[in-house]
Length: 173
Image 1 (cartoon, rainbow, N blue to C red):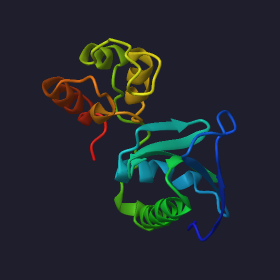
Image 2 (cartoon, helix red, strand yellow; image 1 turned 30 degrees about the horizontal axis):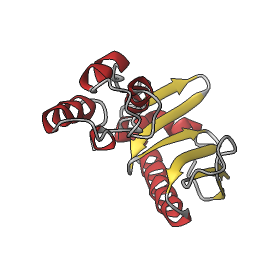
Image 3 (spheres, rainbow, N blue to C red; image 1 turned 45 degrees about the horizontal axis):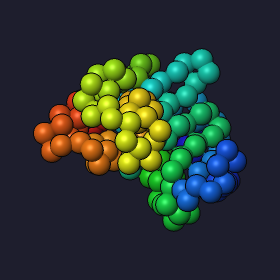
Image 4 (cartoon, helix red, strand yellow; image 1 turned 90 degrees about the horizontal axis):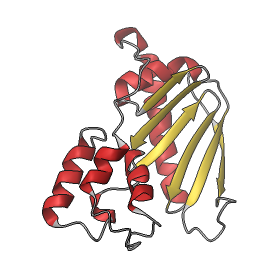
């Protein structure tokens, strides 16, 4: 099974049509479910599920979720960025499938950052300067890989460094 094609769908989220970022769904021509544990081993998936099969990666500054017949990528600048990420994924999927005999499949995800540990590193001022209503919401987004120290304008340089060090343990790039 090699991935040879997909149908790309670019859209803005229905929940907030004023968002400037785009989302992408790639509807796959082939079922890639069998390659997901190998891809997880090669790329270090953030989250892996066997039933139903899915793999979430943090790559190219995005959270990317792969299902047997679908790839979902959120928070894209434009369609060109979606095309680059999808081309990279097709290469990675096909390489993992071709090299699977030499890859030990991985059926678990990486350890997850703890919400309260992130919150302890934040100023807890609920200033909203980051665009979130509370530091807890910011911490939840950071725990999912969507926010980092650069996104909190209230952090002092030492606090920002501590938050980046903590998050880097879970989101190596």
